[in-house]
Image 1 (cartoon, rainbow over the protein chains, first blue to last red):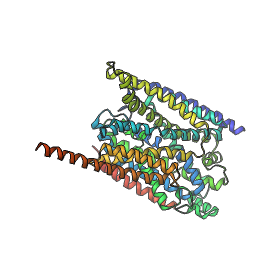
Image 2: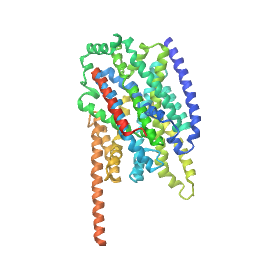
Image 3: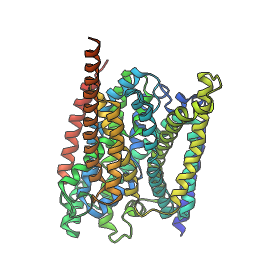
Image 4: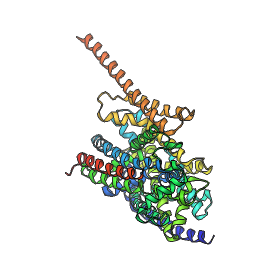
Length: 502
Length: 27
């Protein structure tokens, strides 16, 4: 109990400092947040190096710092396939997608969100609205983060679960609503640095917890093999890494993950092509530090504290054994950063879409059709609606988190995979395929996401990752088929018209 | 598996930096 009191004071003090700092940032960002462009992407206001760190920080969530070490605790070495992909495959995805996305967005002009990018690309308001609705699935992602945060508060500080969730939601909503994208990008940058320190600390702590001097990884490997030889094999016997194909589908998720709206928004923030070079390098460095190190602490926990009731508790348990209270407080701050830096981007991504893609395209023309409003007046109303929706989404996520869901990881994966399966074909085919047509894109959203929901909803496919893989294939196939049929129909109609006039 | 992991990370750095330098050259 004595130790828990120390934690409450130390982490409590850090949280207060954090809250004051982010509120100050929010105030500073308020100048940029009066327009929709400033609020949703803060275009050109933030250094590209910081935007790159923010990309890594938003990418790395509770899942990477709590869920993945939990897998490492349960399955051992096969989990390394996940963290390897988080650095290498995700970074390659970012490198390959960023340039074209930025260039085409710049050419269209005034793009604030991913649904708007797709809507302009295919010249279809319907597509824009559909993708914006699909993005609401990210609420599941937020709920997963809320649960991770509350679980950690509970384990380390003894704060009741419901309180932990309320603290997390309120802190984030306050600074995002005040300072918009500016506050979110800067606080992400700082959180990314704290998270990197946490990762390195978790890794080097194996020197004294596992022992063996500089050969601590060799000793970890032999300790794990002594518990169960399967823990050091490349493929696990069950779970997410049970076969080569399962590992391949995970790499597909980590590759296409880059296209999620709250991450692609960072690319829209940059206002000059020269900024893409520092942005992509800084994102790669951040992904490296945040992805590949902390997983070993999960394996070390298996050696030091076998028999944990919940594998997700591997890291909180490990740090209390490995570090003195002051360092524990720093690491907990790092874990809280991992969670808040992801949720702030998600809140901003969801609400910008509600304002820019739903309210502005559906409600504004209906409400104000008889009034002559200037562009600035409309923009002000959209900003206001966006901030109102931020509070509403906060309350909804709070409500959905109160009943603790069974699995944090699965909930998160479900929400993001539903989105990816709908947008992967329209974005990637739109880059280079001249026959990509809006009917194909619309059909791909319906059938790609639809397939995913059917496969997981009726439990036809055992894993979320495999379901995403199959539904991505369906998404591509439907888009190609419908686009080709449309192109053929347009061509034959034109021919008929041509014959008639000849 | 651990050795394979670090070698793979090194390979990803080399491939990643090559792609990065090609797609985002110095101005």
